[in-house]
Image 1 (spheres, rainbow, N blue to C red):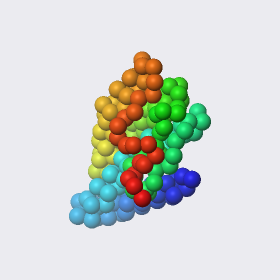
Image 2 (tube, rainbow, N blue to C red):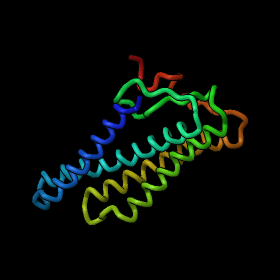
Image 3 (tube, rainbow, N blue to C red):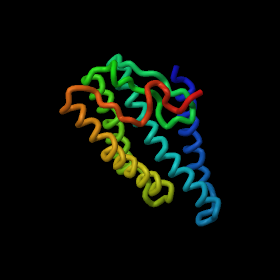
Image 4 (cartoon, rainbow, N blue to C red):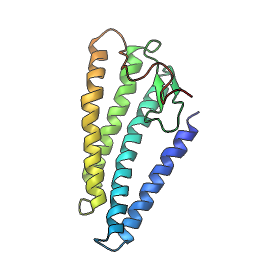
Length: 166
């Protein structure tokens, strides 16, 4: 069911690793090295985002939540979460799984992302921006569910149509 997304995201991960390796192999200071470093850094930030999304999916799956895969491979989301049929507990666990992944990639990038390389600096800053967006966008929804009585709808999409109509 999610195999095509796994292939997509593993391809992004492998492409990022290749760009990183090529950026280190290119002549320092060259246009090629700069372009490859930018690609590697952005790719690493995208990998962090993907980890966050996969963690949400794992949280949803482990709690036996009702969800459907995104219809389009280019969707930034892996699935659509059914706010009407899932419980508050399921929603909170699904949310916390994504937050845990975000904390994990921020710590890993702070500790191990090489800041003496342009790609590392881009990746870390991208990861910090993504973490900030998580706080600004997802935390309010989480706390509304935590202190409310039902699972909130985000209004970002209608039901099982994440990624747009076929």
